[in-house]
Image (cartoon, rainbow, N blue to C red; front, side, top):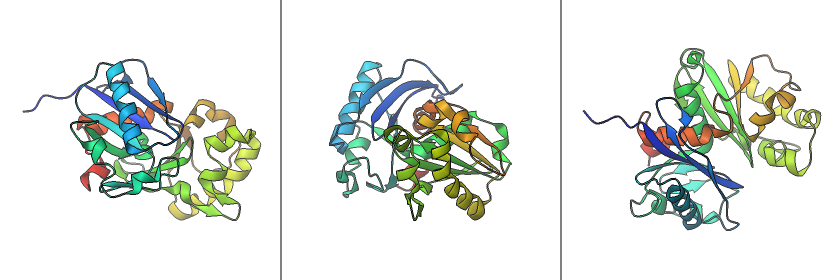
Length: 259
């Protein structure tokens, strides 16, 4: 029987920053400080590998790394990652992250990583309560669908559009920051999308992660929803923890299963 992995480095790649930490897989808690690198303006695969290498070196880590990426992992490339270089869309772009000579990474979508963390360490009811929609608000808006204990990968609900624009363009954490949106202004933009998702998917509950989770009550209280909404169990660290879980082998990352 193989030895159970108890510590694992997880890295969450965002459009603004790249964060990583060693995670205790028994508890889901961080086993050390978060290390942060600013996402380079070019944000090519090589840039991301270099940043991951600096984080791994800073925490004294060697071996496989769980990496959460803001886009759809499609074999050897990454689709729908507007905040990273278009070089990620080229065939073979992800090879340098997966290579044992560089990042040696197990890859997963960033919102799916947050969902995986929620499944692993969050409310036990997630394995029996129907559909939970996890939305992560950061530079964009990511999503994960959790159905009776299973993760349905690569949903990308932030791409939904209305006459006013795409959900992730007008109601993301970046939009709140750059446009200095009040909770009321944000809710006015976000409510139609929540209404549409509720009509389409009939979720049992909502979970909010990403930067918005730090001021969750101020914003979520302005929404009118028929089902309960709560902050992700691991808050802003959910992506890091979920990436670590994927790499630690406790749950096979859906994106890697299809790679």
